[in-house]
Length: 146
Length: 416
Image (tube, rainbow over all chains, first blue to last red; front, side, top):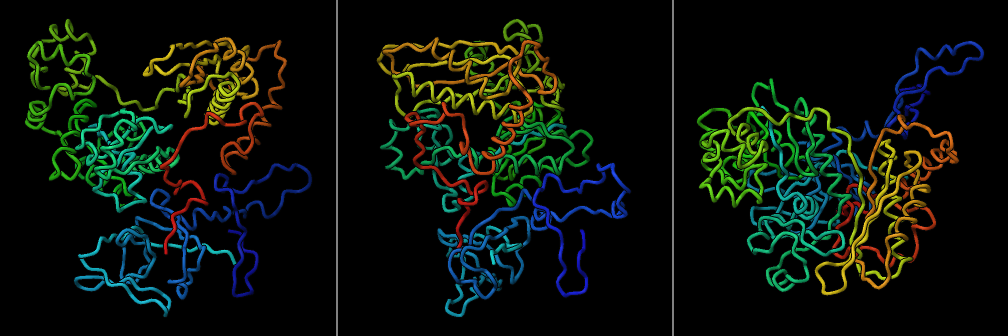
């Protein structure tokens, strides 16, 4: 990581978009003195490595609608879903409920669970053994265009 | 020990990852031009629709029984296959990928292969959504048998290990000789004639009898069934000896131009595959064939050309492919299928240069690097050689094609 600014609350990092070359190129220029920074060059930030902990289990999906808007999931955002993560109480999960995919916060009760939207205009959905239900994967990150 | 991993009904399972509502429902997958059934889920097998059957002949049965039909979506199957193989490679010492949905695991020295197998079955199911079965045994042939047992008996939870003499004998007595790896249908009649019904019966025959009637290959299978390793684990898969692109036309073609265009396109695809694998081809073969199922005049021909210098340059390859197709094409026939095969593959960096070479190879290499990059970033055929893109009269029919959920931004799964 190359830290460029430390005096503000935000830390800025150099981005690297080429995941096949995550290592900075060192040297190669013969003219002049060697850069004093050469010894301190670090591996650049690779978004794939940051957002994808487990590539084999990671899938992307796109948010449609506004039911999770208060959790920061807007229409058109891309979800990074990690299917290897354990579903915990309060996880945001992509679920398959009675024939449709849906993203909601899950609250696990004793014999059933709730799919809780993050938008006051929507009501929680109660899921019982009567439903055709599976937790498809856990949302690890949201990618949004600002 | 050696493990054999097999993805259960792989193509149907891939479709179910993004259609969980179809779990437990019958599915068939059709070949590229929607001609034939190339995969069936267990639920579809019950309706006795045979493999490779032309779909249109079974349309009534398919509709009546609510069988879900998909066109083959190779980008999706390929991606999910790679994920499965990667997981296998992460948790075992070595993997030999045998096909898109099968792999051998090298488990010598692994202390608890049964636990490793059970864990892999669970992981692949949860992480990707693909059900797999694993058989573990001292030899490849026995591992195949163990896999069959793992699939057959649900209480085994899709993994089974043959690690004692008792289990081996039990497995062989259970196993129909026709289902043994390497026996095949050709030998089935002969087996029946000699009264060999199970794998166990086969192992009871003497070596000389087996060699005499089933050749040295049969003897190898016998020894493998007895637990003696004859088929080695391929630690490094041998380099591919040829690359082929062959397709059936959606509609029969009679005129030369659309056929030529298709051949050019296939050649370009082969060129891309070669460059991706950093290989060059020494020869190119083009073939054309009519539909042998129809009562029309039949013709089929193939012809090959040798490159002056082994190449992976599509422009150069297309020139030879075109000359070749012009040689074999005859008018008056309804062509159903065409293909291009490149062979004599050698690594790009081992090509002997020809001093009379008139082609500026480094320049082309650079050009193709850019073309391949653009096509990989923006989708196939963003840029192609003029002669390989035209009216596309021969384009494949892909009617019930699922989205490329894992390889295209525009095809991502929508969730509300």
